[in-house]
Length: 419
Ligand SMILES: *Cc1c(COP(=O)(O)O)cnc(C)c1O
Image (cartoon, protein in one colour):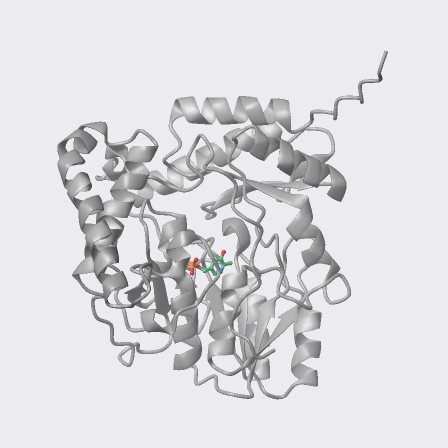
């Protein structure tokens, strides 16, 4: 595997009628008096970067992962996790996870036995539910390899008495998945100083782009209407300015669409090392400090339980996790379908109905197949996950749960026979 370009995932659906990810609203700042719940930022020293994948690349660099080394990645993965490993010149090795998305410790041990150059293990807390951290920590210590906690789905929580990320040598997270922001990720370490990770602003164009993109996304879902009216002239000016910049680039013979933002913000799996030394924008850092964490945790748990109640007993499917343990702040509500063809049909119906849905790991890295890991192949096809984020308002949540309960179990209409 030499290429760093990830396989392309199936095209994203048209924009669903309710937001798939958090959008900024006045309510985002509510509940300010409440104590801040534990998050990955409490695990140790932290550096705020522009995405989770950049944080992962920095963690591997800090660990000294180099050409010829091996890095253990879960067979059930986001495509964005692989290019950082390739960027180091290292080889990704995919370990098994079982049907409940738990890391297979025996398989990890076997892979370590087979390859003495394995340097690190990346463990993902899927959908916000923790892996067995004491066991993974013990395994890594026994093998002399590093543990990187992938908290992309677990910004908040408490796992075996510690905040997310506190068991790893390093932890990474993706703020965009939990906060109403356009870019953001963090690198955290409970065990190592991060002095060598020096960051600077990506420049005024990026700073402006993040603020405007965050607001535009929010306006598109009917949030912050008074601000939208006030900012309308500014937004017009921005569109005019952007057209000018593009025209100038074309005149200068440069590509018109040179990226002003990392690929992570556009939901693709690309990796661009130019973002390695860039600090998260001022606006994203301001939001991270001001948006209420207590509200995020309380509402995500409440919305998750609401979806569990509405969808948990439908025929042919069940929640991936039987319960929502204390200390878990869910990313999405994952629903398991017993039959893969049923899951395909339900996925198509849900998207046609304009409902928001995620098929995490829908596309796996080439070579990761049922022979390497049957559990991952099943999870990638048979789990449909629905948003439970804090910015779903009451009407959106009512509409979404009611429509899902109708659409999910629907039987295909019988073919109409000609008279
Ligand atoms: C999203 C995601 C990442 C990468 O985060 P970005 O901020 O998109 O770069 C890493 N790991 C997992 C499991 C993810 O879902």
